[in-house]
Image 1 (cartoon, rainbow, N blue to C red):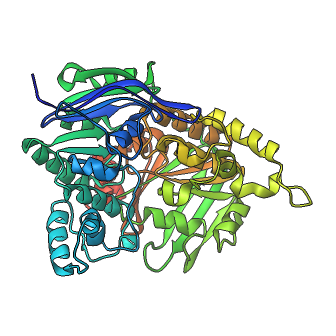
Image 2 (cartoon, rainbow, N blue to C red; image 1 turned 45 degrees about the vertical axis):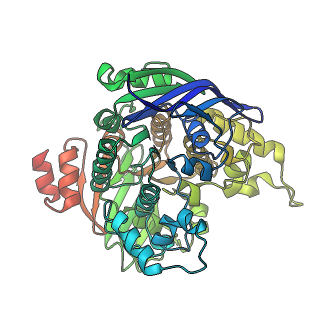
Length: 508
């Protein structure tokens, strides 16, 4: 029998009226990579926070190396050799990469003096295993993908025996993800045990030895990866068959002649140049490309979050004067940020307050008083439509799982009845069941006449959901792919600069 490093027996956790975990079991063997799967709200992150000492269980037992332990804090978990890389970025933005990586060790120092040269040297040695990021840079100056790598590098400095990775590749490029996989395999070879939380089945079946499934806060099963298929895991996660991950696309006759959005010659003089495209009624337009290619900046330029030096934006043929995001919202253009925690939702505010925040005038009377009943009714309607799992609309958004927080962020955009929604990584960190629900919702919105633009780094989503795809490279539209020539190879050729729109068509 393999040596058990960690054992969880009968653990339950209650947050107020919400039962997050009910009598769950979990075991981790020495030197294994163990996947933990389940829909958002299934209890995965709650259990990991219990193991890492972030929260305490209501009941149950935790054993490390066969010995019962009480993990009272993250520091206690680290003393036991347990490290957690959160799904959400939890770094100090005003500190350098090196300072963030060794913050725990710095707090334990007795000397009042810091050897920054040694700190930066040691940090750079660890960071170089993942990516060429200068550890002297402030975290605030890094893109989200690089911040995620800093989180992982920070965990690698703790000399863990048990490493928990919660959606570690959600913000990484394919190259960065492959580097991480190589490190995971090296850690496994050195008898480090890894709990790997991910919704990406290809990663799970490539990296992991066993898989445990949770559903609705309860343990479902544990299997050897060799004994199950991805379809088996998905069925156990959702408790039902998912016959179609993506809704039917539009046929040629379904796309209306009416143009909703026109972008003509848009430039900011730095990150994107001479961007031109249109969005027709009824279709979902995808924007693909490598991280850092300028996709997000283009969306920000359209909706007034980034200043422009040239270009015109037209809605239903009428030119719009958009200088700020408030102008964009007033015109009917809204933007869903890829940074859910930083820009998508207000974590401390209630679900109802988050959903109404862009349209407070609709709930305010002449005396300036808010109609809380109307606000709650709207929130309950959107929560029902999007399948938000919650205790009630008065609950703070921080009490929700990551996927349910994303649904609230989408509801916030829909509450202003927009003409165009720009969605940047709309299903990042969301489980397969919730993704299916959101994809179907987006198709319903497109059919109802709302213009939908989706920026996505997930190739299956880009190809499976969108009717057309624009590929961005170095701030310019490298080519357009229609349903007839939309393939993974064609997108990669355009994104990497080894093909043009014509060669991509030929490759398809």
